Length: 225
Image (cartoon, rainbow, N blue to C red; front, side, top):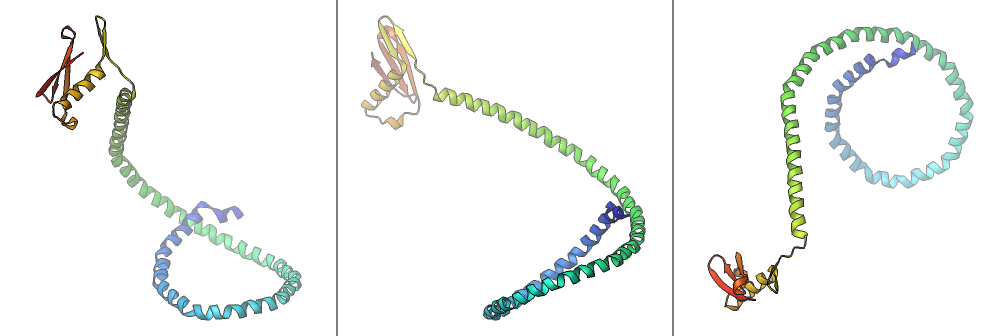
């Protein structure tokens, strides 16, 4: 019989009662909160003044309280033992009432479940397309992110790697980066500023032992090797 006290139906019914009472408790708490703050603030000075006397009284009475507790121990055990049959009898009388309550509550719980099931299925069915779209878009976004990440990684590798290009002809060897540096220096030497260079094209002509450059598709110059 003891297992019926913890049945799931009784728990659900107790939860329903608690949930129903919660708004009332909350409203009462909100309404009394300012009053409690005022009472606390008004009594604080008196409590602070009384604390030393309370502590002193506590120190004086503690030995007597301990002694009383020790003497009361056997008497309390006797009271508890004598009360056990009464409690057992009350429990036995309460069990049929709880069983009846459970029996009455089960059809209502079952009915509520049956009524809720179609709504749950309807909500689930209506959200399935949206969930599918979200899943597809998430997978697509993940694929795009992976591709973009790979592209960034490749570009970063190109930028961070050390690259050098040499042009060899006859007995000569020219590093292209040196040609670019000389082209910029020659452009500046002709009265321009380095910051004016937005675009620079260099054309190497081994037959002339020279390179020709064009800055910003306008200014031109020549560099001899």
